[in-house]
Amino acid sequence: MSPPMTPARTRNAAATRTAILEAARKRFAHEGYDQTGVREIASDTGVDAALISRYFGGKEELFAEVLSCAPNIAEFLEGDRESFGERVAQMLAVEPMREEKFELFLIMLRSASSPKAAEAIRRHSHDAFYQPLETWLGGDDAAVRARLLSCVMMGATMNRVIYEDYLLDGQQRQELCEALARTLDNYVSGPV
Amino acid sequence: MSPPMTPARTRNAAATRTAILEAARKRFAHEGYDQTGVREIASDTGVDAALISRYFGGKEELFAEVLSCAPNIAEFLEGDRESFGERVAQMLAVEPMREEKFELFLIMLRSASSPKAAEAIRRHSHDAFYQPLETWLGGDDAAVRARLLSCVMMGATMNRVIYEDYLLDGQQRQELCEALARTLDNYVSGPV
DNA sequence: CCTAGAAGTCACCAACTGATGACATGGCCC
DNA sequence: GGGCCATGTCATCAGTTGGTGACTTCTAGG
Image (cartoon, rainbow over all chains, first blue to last red; front, side, top):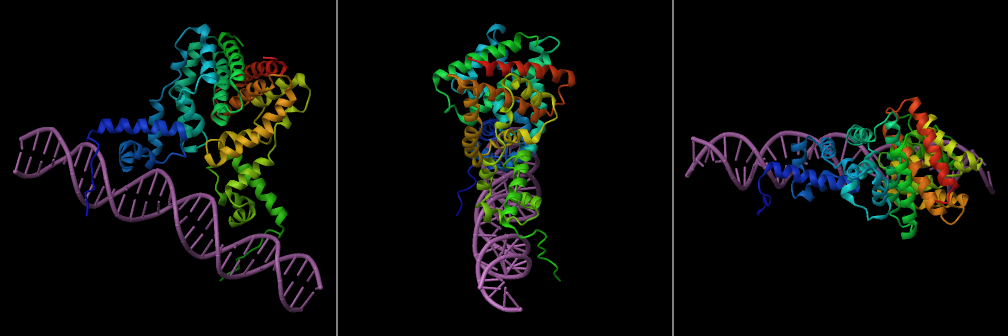
């Protein structure tokens, strides 16, 4: 009656753990914390949902661990300072959404409304986004300028997530990009 | 055994309907679509949850109807054009969060990640935010400038929601406000 | 070979969600 | 005042969620 208990996955705890983390990262970025069930993550990984509780303690802890190894602001900061605005604006407005670059943003935006995830997001985004950004910016008003950059970047991402760009055509996105680049560079080169 | 069936609420369908809408609006703005249960809304109203299904068809339709009578962009547009940036920046950065002004934003930000709510948000925010804003802005590139304004306003609101301003002190918020005002006015007075 | 423990699976639970149909009740009209 | 329909309540359902402990199976070490 039962050929079940098919192992399928080679027994390797470390690999399984990272596979779960990977699947969870994608799910959380795509669907957000609430919309993602442990069963889905497990299914993506090809594993039973119980393993998530066993390895991470629960969905909440899994989310925290996903955050802690998600790509951070560093992606945006490498490159020369003068082209920062142009580079980021391109990614924000004209290039096809590069999920891997914006994964941290996407996770934040789509999960911030969940109380369980909010605290982890606050902490992590402060450590992995604001702090490095402030340091990179330098100067007395670095905190304010970091916030300004964050507003524009998050707002642009949010808009893109909501409207999926069906509101703007290519030409308009180009104009949008140029304006965003100017604004961003203005904040980078500050002082305010 | 039973003093139950306490009516408590005077029998008035229209009043009850609007009371439910009111309660739902606050809940959706505070907690977001997913985090809000029909039982909570009903309890706030002092009514049984079944009434929500009866009056609105279901939670989803209730959300759509809440959106359709939520405050819209008009709140921000009244007043003279020159002081737009200053006014809005004040509300975004220094004044204590005025929930009633930002309710539409809050609902959008906290509910956008829910697929059930997303479509209603897209449609409504287009009609009640972008269209009026574009008309108010005028000019060829009104659509782009509207998007730019939206990025800054949504980004600022999002940041405020996430961090609750515990990252910036009063002085910094003042600086933030001035920079936001300049950026906003820059977009308003366009062309880009 | 064979046993001990790690790795993974299964069955199940308790809580919660939105929804529905049967029931009670209050107020209006004749 | 009596009946009737709108108004509101209750009990309950079916689905989903995250989580847990007992079970099976694989593999390493003796």
